[in-house]
Amino acid sequence: MSGLESARFWRTPALPGVDLLKARYVTHRFPPHAHDGYVISLLLSGVEEFAYRGAVHRVGPGSLSTLNPEEVHDGHAGVPGGWSYRVMYPSVEFVSGIAAELMAGNGTPCFSETVTYHRPTVALLRAAHDATEGGDDLASSTLTRTAFAALLSHHASRRPPEAPRWNDDPAVRRAREILHSRLVDPPTIEDLARTVETGPFALIRAFKAATGLPPHAYLNTLRIIRARRLLQAGTPPAQVAGAVGFTDQAHLSRHFKRTVGVPPAAYQRAGTYKTGM
Figure (cartoon, rainbow, N blue to C red):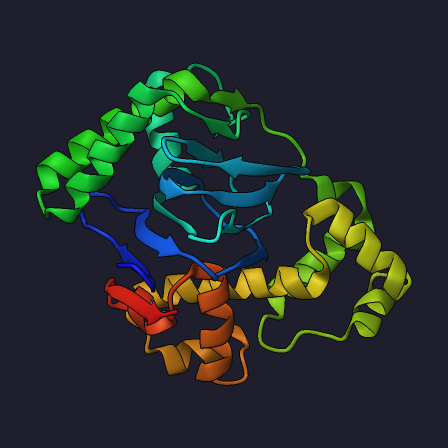
């Protein structure tokens, strides 16, 4: 594997709502982006650095990183040799379903501690991730739910329902609504600002403060989230590109690989992607 970057995405019917990734990255840099579900990663070797919630985290082997839905983060190598890790991307529905059996109260499970080195939880999650590769539905579903039960019990709390940050600013709230409804034909920043009755620079500042991303990067995050769903449903990448507002398949591939870590075709076929260095 020396001299190569490689990544494999896969899914299993035994775990609906969960994407899985096993990867090694050296020069790849994930841009600031967010997911509509959780990100649970186990670092196996090397060092990764990522910015999250106003801090830069530097994680090494044996670490467990837990990122909440819709929270902006990036990622890149923290040492010349890069890093390797295993990642689970469970949906809010999947995690909430397990939490409902374990935790009292309403609200979405929330991880307040971004990085831990809790060996028992790491070992359970590693065993669960390994099991999904073997194609044993009973083992993978049992171990994954057991691992998430431990993860939630030791590292999560219930976050009571609250208004998202963008609700504090009517201009940002309206701008988000427009971007969600216009993936294919987004307005210019001038038109967007005019529609929400503010200035372009004021909107850019307020939007980034509320969402963690400027409007154009937020739009690309929305497009990638939608593209992942369409690819999972079997839509050809060329059709996905047009459906989410990218100019063509090459445009989709460029943004998709930067954000997800593999090209759309590799993601869709749940295969392994390798590249020489």
